[in-house]
Image (tube, rainbow, N blue to C red; front, side, top):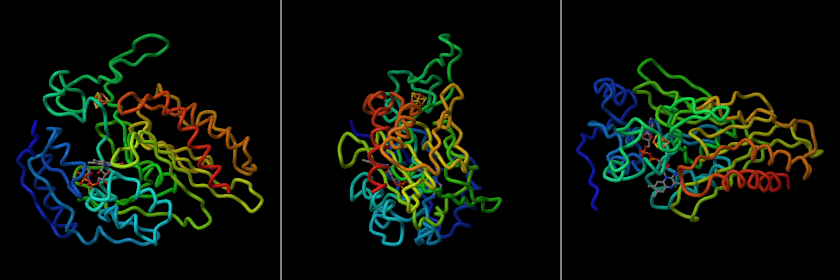
Length: 349
Ligand SMILES: Cc1cc2nc3c(=O)[nH]c(=O)nc-3n(C[C@H](O)[C@H](O)[C@H](O)COP(=O)(O)OP(=O)(O)OC[C@H]3O[C@@H](n4cnc5c(N)ncnc54)[C@H](O)[C@@H]3O)c2cc1C
Ligand code: SF4
């Protein structure tokens, strides 16, 4: 079956202001486009396409790169080759998709990529046989049709639990990154962990027309960071689990700070801030356990094997992968702890 792009009008502004002005004129009927490697495949599947597409590819303001600031328009191939950004960021960028896709794909597009689900990333005809779903054209979720509480069915969830499958998001959340958004009302900056909303449809704390302009990193000198990805194949495939960690370790081997980011399990990259400074991003449904509940005390303690295992067990216990991307949730849940243990053991040495 051939899947064709629907018709749309392409606009190519060369400044942020021009892009924002264009967006204002289109009301709700437009999408921003960076590399197009996520948006255009979705358009081909007939998923929520708009009549106007505003390309951000020609806006120089979005392409700056430095040790503390990365423009949303920086392509992943440049990020992967950069000597300026933390090595863990360059490495994680290199694990995404394929070299060809990384030439077009951007940081902004990666952090804002649409949530994924077996019942959503399908052709229009495939979805029609099931009567569509909440996220496009329908009114039911096939993954969690009912929420159960105390053994009783409470209600149809009306929350999409599609998975946010970005490789960079859990790492940047663990590193304590912030993001800047430019909109008709001006510019605002917020923690990346608070940018994500626990709803696979609304997805972000983003007002209509706002453009994601850059990611800012705090000073990461002295912080050891890394990322581990689980995917069916080592190339091309989206993660079905991603575990990132940013660890501050004193000379005596005691933990000064620890943040773990968990990706491809939920609608948001989940943040475990063991230092307790940052608020956890809003999770989709209050019925699920909070990752901070029962979080072990680690600050000031020696990062020995026993402590690493305690941390890994906490991640396994609280990870909540859904049955909407490849590989069984039970396996991904177990692997979340395994990856956390391996990553912390590597970072310690
Ligand atoms: C075969 C294949 C394999 C892939 N494998 C992986 C993988 O392993 N890991 C992974 O993380 N991803 C993967 N992806 C997903 C995707 O290609 C990348 O995440 C990529 O970084 C998306 O960037 P883009 O610039 O192409 O985004 P686009 O497709 O241009 O945009 C994605 C979304 O973000 C919005 N957007 C983009 N930029 C902005 C901005 N500056 N401001 C406001 N909104 C914006 C768009 O409107 C759109 O909704 C894969 C994709 C394909 C096709
Ligand atoms: S999780 Fe979201 S995308 Fe998947 S079936 Fe439910 S509503 Fe649709």
